[in-house]
Amino acid sequence: MALFPVVLLTLAVVHPGAAAPALRGNASSQSGVQRGVQVPDAGLQRARIGRSLTFVNSCPEPLAVTGSEDAYTRLAPGASHVMDIGQMGSTNMRFTPYFLPGDSYLCPEDACSGWRVTNPGRGSQWIGGMNPHYAAVCNPDLSGRAGVVGCCSKESPEYNAATGNCPNINNGGWGSLFEVSFDAWGGLDFLDFSTNFVNPDQGYVFFNIPMSLTSLASCSNGGSLRWQCLAADCNTAYQSPEDTEHNGAQLSCPSSASYRIEYCPGGMMPF
Image (cartoon, rainbow, N blue to C red; front, side, top):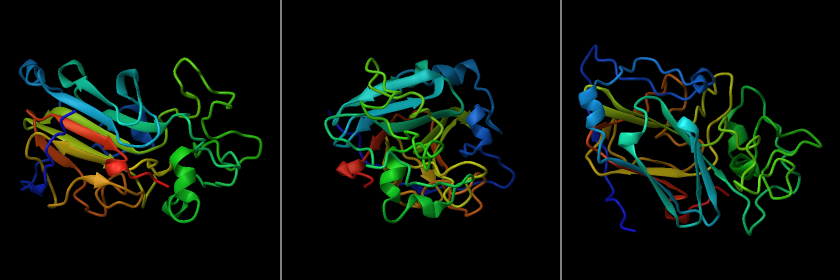
């Protein structure tokens, strides 16, 4: 498969008073409600024709990508899946990856009982020691309790052989979060990675698997770095719902762009 060219992000000028849509992942935004996004007209909807959103699994383990509009895609190592943007919704699209049971056994020996995550979570619970391993495969809601299985394996009571997944464990409420609104405002798409590492906002930190984004069009946010999030504390993602850290985490792209999301970029596993 031919890879999209890497696009470096350049400085964008934001005019005073112009309110770009907010795509920040937090506890309330899981309901699917997004503030400040205008509904595109028919002309903008037609502009989405011929554009694509491609998910690529560069991890050495199988993945599922779940998300908006009941999206569920299984990706073997090295596989990709192309979605037609013209057939997708326009605003508040959200996607999260999960490791699926494969030839390797990824679950911790303690079945996640050793990961005692508070609610709201703290960023320090996602980094250091065993934490990146727990965060990669353990549902924080189910972790830290003896006798409760928080990780999906073929031996899990929740395992569904037909889908290769454990839907009540890998349920979309945790893990690395990619958000996008197409043709949302001013003829632009708005995209972001959101971890809430600094302020989980009554929820958890949204990170389990490293991710990166490339685009077929020149995009911009508040800096000139390649857009990727390789750890829970990455500063290219929203670290709080309202971006009080001013990371410039939201990326704006022309509504002609196609996108490629790569998990485990370059084969980089989270643990």
